[in-house]
Image (tube, rainbow, N blue to C red; front, side, top):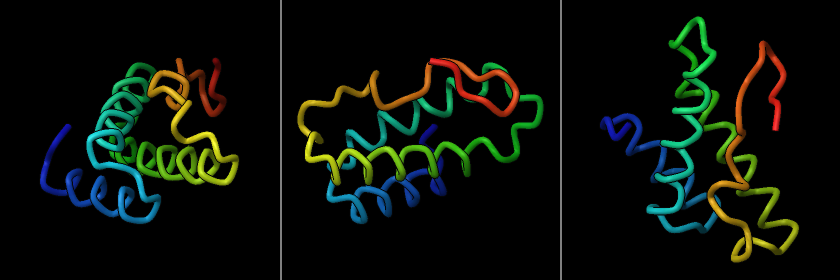
Length: 86
């Protein structure tokens, strides 16, 4: 998912969280993929994925564990309705 809009969002999150764009891009793509699995309406998936990635990176940064957290740990496993199941 590397549309021009997605690239801009990825760039903004990378700058905001002081995280390499490559990592943000991987997290964003994985989060979009997972959210699309159960999504009935796809219009908001990119927005929700960006929000999830941004919040995850901000939380990791505050916890001081950015380097030890893998991409798999940062993205949700699956979605059921409004709740994320891990």
